[in-house]
Length: 355
Image (tube, rainbow, N blue to C red; front, side, top):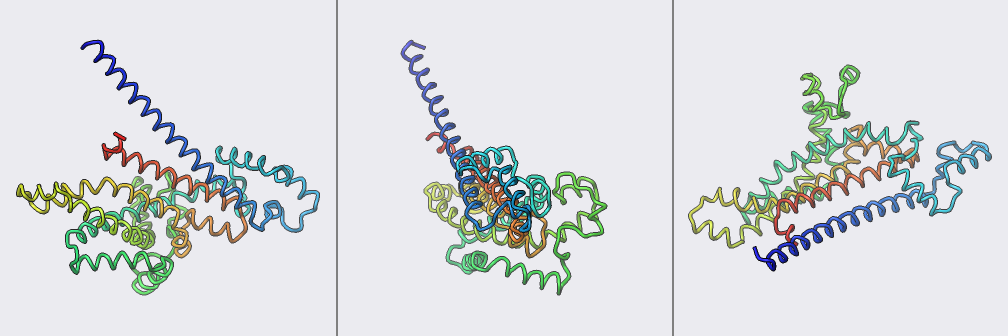
């Protein structure tokens, strides 16, 4: 290799390294800015609501000198910028204060209730993906047919009907009338004190421990709320899958594949869906994040002891430490899933890595 070629190769390597470093730096700036924005919004919400956090802790009849001493100890008598600094510092260390409702550290409560929400949202996303993707493919392949219209109506109903109304109707039908599912809650009281969860994910823990009776009971409790969340997810996933597939089926490589004599099944599933799967990963990830943050009404109707129900009960009892702590955790999870989906998109699509 000549000296000019060596110099050019070294220059290209430096350019790639600089481009990679620049992408990483921009990525970190976006993460930090987004998270600081989340903290700023929750901080100012906590300050503008007409609830005194000190009185929420001590009660309305606390002596004035005790109120002032507590306000000073918590830093509420300091300027707003100092309060915000303390708020960010505590949030970054996982210190969201103490819950007035449970008298436990908020982070300890979140660690206890979040696995229930995670299990419910994961189950719902699996149901929505396994059904929504094939329905979207069917609607795209049969565009304009009765099957396409049915899939679009299913998606429209999933978007339009309030999920709490569907939840109440489902309880009336499948629990009160047909007795197909268990009553609201996460586990029967018979197993609640004899079953010792490890990860907090009851389905996995009961399988791992070989307690099939507990697994069946947990499954009967989770199947209805997870199916409702899955239906909500299915409406979004099927619609986006249909859109992505219609775009892929109109590409020239599909025409070329048909000209080569490839079977329609192989063209659809091995070629069109494979290319549509790249943006579909982002859609499923965003749907998952939406279920994690948006299952409040479902958890309330089904008395599901997850983060949504915890935040609802805390809000009803003016427990703002718990409300803001739960909001920050949900926002952090949403940011993390968005970052993960972006990384997966870049991994699956080589064109984005070249930019």
